[in-house]
Length: 391
Image (cartoon, rainbow, N blue to C red; front, side, top):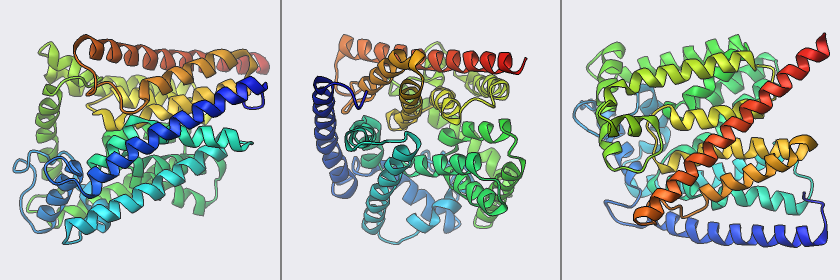
């Protein structure tokens, strides 16, 4: 694809230029929101985490008192180095600098994993996350997803490539940090379990438990009581978020038919299904597992549009399939391109009216589920081929 005919290269260069232009405009606006826009819209989620964290470490009750407090106790402990500053202006700038560094780290990981060989391919792969609406939305809101993605990928890739005690400890630490927002990253723990990285799994669980206990020191309740208190308002906050409409996830759909009380059960069922599938296909390439988990993680619980960065994983998995497997080249590249169109900034969820918005969301749902189906079929085909080769 990258080393094709001159016309193909010209079209690809045009596409890269358009993506970077869109990304530059979108990110400029979102960094203004993060750094300079006044309340309530500027860095709105970062402000919520800032207020929650300062209340937490001041010993003030958080769960049940701040309706925005939807993060578990360990998250506040893990966020402390970035949010404990007394000035919110300082926090905004720290967040901006670390967001830039995280995005750069993510691009470097993508280049390495996709075996980007030419400047044009590297430019294309760099332009993809830059031009996604979720990237800018996370930055403008002060959300965590841009910070989490490189941590998550680096941890899982390190577990794939190395088995030394030092590597396992480093990978566990990276994954533990990514669990600051477990609604995004927790499903990926199934990859650790399915691939039987038992020492890493034990280290991650132990570390998370220790951070939970440590965080509880600053509140009046026990760790268990705090976890129970956290879970109850989380469901209330999810219902509040779903009332705003337009979010593609099972929590929103259940609320629309008056069955929101089944959301937790369905989330557990989806995780169980993913876990069973993951175990059966545990020897499939890591990127296929990442792609499938990325789609499932996007649907398993409540998410807003800034969490759609999860769909970068199936996009890259399909790109890699198209690049490396001639039989799947067309469908891999075509579906990756469709995914990119569905994720292109500024997105239609808040930009389009009426029926246009409905059509846009329908297109997103269809292409996301198509990507999931293709990755599942690819994994199944390669599992059968591997079994036949062993006979």
